[in-house]
Image 1 (cartoon, rainbow, N blue to C red):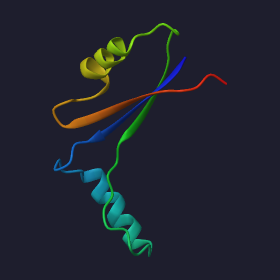
Image 2: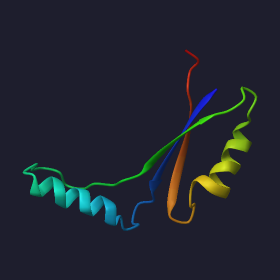
Image 3: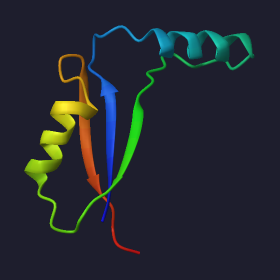
Length: 79
């Protein structure tokens, strides 16, 4: 089964990469962009019986820094 982990900075945490992207967009003439937050997407291929608890453990021990980041687990439909 395919699982996506979406990791993003918590509100209030400074995002220097997002600021750089925002500045670059402005420099390229893209007006109206008020804020940019950069996160990451992790895709895992796991056994069908992998529990939600096991996925949460993976996130909290390795895939996300829960002090400054939030994460969301998305199980993908079988094709």
